Length: 613
View (cartoon, rainbow, N blue to C red):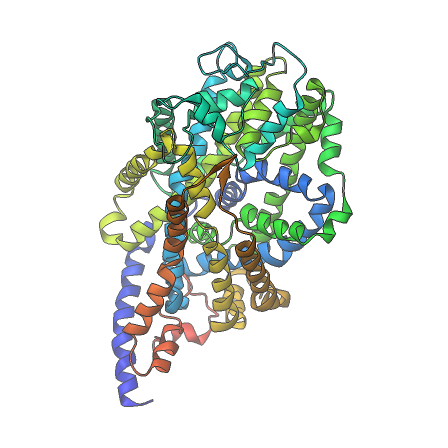
């Protein structure tokens, strides 16, 4: 080795050894899961989100029913599980959060910051789902469910009450199915109702009008901000207080909460399913849900939607799995855990469809229309169609309360995970100042996020929410997944990564994972990314079209999430020494930060080599 190169290495290593010592001094304060069961429940809670209940059943039914499970499980094993396993091993091996774990390849450190930004933005918007659900949970305790009534201050002359008729006009229920990408608005800020009707499709059912005109009270477009709806602000505050209390002590408190939030949804789903299958029309709904249409498999869009659904259901690319596993014990079996959690998450999606369609079948039979006319996705399902169906049962308040309590449990888990990632990044970045002030840091951050979410409580809040939901992480998550495969499959090398995994679980992963990480998984992600770009459409609300500036803001969110990647690439190259090639080699070589959180007796010699850059 040249004298200059040796000097450069010694200078770099001195700095990195100091960083390593700092890391060791604060390691005990970072925390660990109280038990392996807490870790598993946290993963399940993160994996099982609202998308499993309000998106998968609709997507499955629309794309061939039972036949859709063929491409779905194909992509689960080719893309979902490999990425999930990879991220699980990243966090557990290094014992570091989503930023510091990229010591494996400093050139790609920006991915960690991009994941953090995506989670921060998602925290701001996702909490609104909990806000709406809290409002419905509160209203479920009313003596008469408000979404069954007409003649109230929020109703229009077009309202049709469940109590007044058992027959709906077909167009009435078909409006509900439009709620997947459509939200409606009412006049509550000096805007004429005629203006609203001219922009958006009319609502007729009492449940739909309660959602539009009581809960949301939204304006005809994003350009009409309107008033701040204080009933939503109050529910938002309650939601953030609940999240803050559960996260106040980090994984120590979350680990106890997930015993309830990760298991309660399954108990309530079983209870609702048992009640649902005893209803007339339930079998028709389940058959409609699972009846296979194998001719659909010839359509490329079905395979694309299956791959997209895996990305939404399993959740790799957010960095949450890395964060949660960084608190895990070093020798936990990540191979077993990744397969088990992914299968549980996918199974929950299918099971949730049975619960949803059994009750929708009852609703269709009761109002005298086909199941296809009451099927919807997203808010149209959980805030309109399903509550209306439950309102037809004896003791409707009880069933509605249990349903929304189940949604709260599912939503809280996901919010915990996103927020824990962001907090861990902040605390890990300033360990000396914040590691002993975790409660204070959590309270301050939750308060700031509460203030940031208040615009979602205005009359234009639903439009803002849709912008966030449509653009945040839309393309960057796929880019993050591709980059992870490139780093671990090619730059660091899947063989070396296999040796790292062997230190943890006692054996190397099956050879098929080397092939998946190098070729198949990134290939699928690239195909999804390209197809998503080609098929991308600007979101709309019925006939309402977003103004150009709103779409531009949405694209800014997409760019902001991915922007740290090129920025930190440039920074890594700039900090290097030597020629451009030498700087590139330095920035792709693991630093001292990439090492096992516990050095076992049998450890590759590279982890004892302090000449690593």
